[in-house]
Length: 313
Image 1 (cartoon, rainbow, N blue to C red):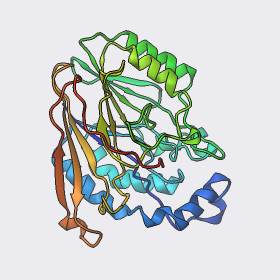
Image 2 (cartoon, rainbow, N blue to C red):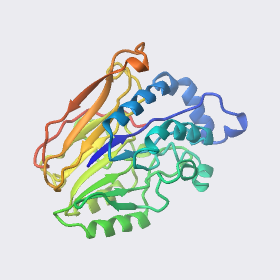
Image 3 (cartoon, one colour):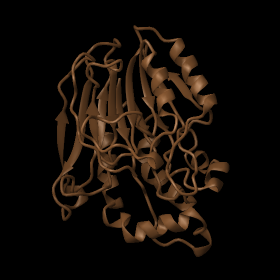
Image 4 (cartoon, helix red, strand yellow):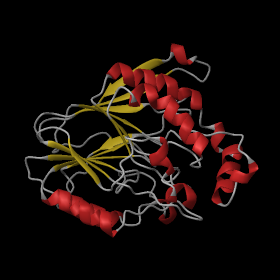
């Protein structure tokens, strides 16, 4: 089964009616004008969409932060832009902190309204993917007045524990959550105001799950794939989506997306490929070339590729 992981698109609109700029959204829009718009290029998303369509996945997973300040217009734009994928391929989306940016957007379930059928309506969301592979999607984003701290909550943790208790060592579990529960060695540590408040509780449940674990997340705008070495999480593989629209010297055309080919049996080797556009900022979207970097086909007993972390979004 082929999965594509995409995250942290951060679609935005620069011109917003003044009456929508209340509370935290005013600060978010100010940060957009002063900082974020200089490193996020929305035009980079369409080539990524075309490339994903060529990959022809069985399932697309989006790890959240589709929008910048959870405006209805932002959701409408991104829903239309993603339609060539969501209309054709099975898609599951979890919210990021920017998709739950305000209390009103959260109360009205705006993301669920604008992306119906793709954002689960009950959490945690569990489905069986193959005979051995399962998916567990978690809602970890909550609105905050002054920070980006995530929270899963007791009810979801109970549900996660229930799902894990039904799995065996012949099963494998794909966990989709916006927030990481652990970062690679040598990466920048997550600060208190940007991390998942109950990450320790979630990690405690997952480390006791007998199934193989593939933990997919976003939030930190730099892609990585790694496996802890010599710990009680040696059966984990962590993959951070990165941001397809964020530019930098290393990724002038954005950070692309991940392709993950699940093996039929839980502990067979996992095939992971990172698709990254190549060129410079003057390269037209139609002329994008792609670097396809396949990680060594590894099982859970070996260490994967580690990438240093950038500050979270």
